Length: 421
Image 1 (tube, helix red, strand yellow):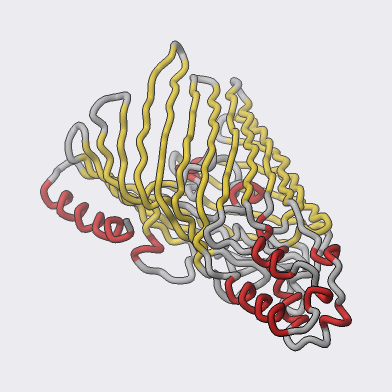
Image 2: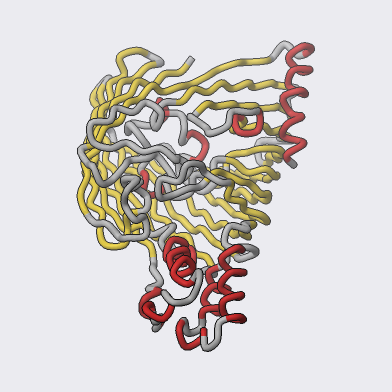
């Protein structure tokens, strides 16, 4: 599938040379972020290896630039290619391509796509990186920051049907993807792969409201924990009475392994548009059969007041993960310290178990001003409370032990200019 994705731009160039109905558009955001915390470094999502601490004024977390080609091949066939710069670690054709698909729509009810499509998990899936498309200065991190994966390499089929004043649509999609994921001030972000992704997205829309329900299942393709699995298995085999020092160590690390384990993401979202006010909300839960990612529940509720060229908004968001207490399993730490490599294996285990440890609530207020037809200025203030065992979304200072749970509060200020062209 990746080969097909890389060939699509060449197909587009051929179409551009021969077909007259080609449109080029783009979008971008120039943003700045600052915070008031020395302990919690802000980052936009789990793919970011940087951080924004007190007195930092950072442009990389919020700034992006995108371009999109829409090629109408016939009444039934079109091609869409979208590339985006968002401060990726490596800039190449594969990392820049956000969308690259061929669509066949034989009639108004059916649509078939193949290539790189948006990974349909969220209410704002199709435009999460297009700042001009929503009122906030940034999408809620508690939902959108947890899963940074943007696209799906595969295929989907969508059926749409008007039912009275409501339009119903159902999308079935299948494919795979990979995206950089990191935590704890890691210097780089290794690829995190999902295989055998299969999902169903249902959508109900009317003039004033829409509701979406999504359920996605996948298989993890990750060797990240294998060295630790091998290491603890060797300790169990070579160290006498290791099972008394670390009870059920092999069973524990097998349960923490991610490779070939299954995961699921379920969400319900929607919005209602009054004359002057729009209410938007998403609730989601992701669950795996691995101890490394036991489950994350998250959501937000936002209200937006519209007044001519100005939007005023407020939001409340939360994210909470289930946790496994390694220290409650009966490990004899003084004895483990006498085993060569024992404490290192213990520390690595705590690192893995806390990798997706999230427990926070954020309240936001902000303002958007559409001062031109295709340009908007946004200002937003977030107040986040990080509770026990839930700080790994925020980067720690370099000198801190990343496995230690941190609690605290942090205020983050966002200012950006979003535009279309």
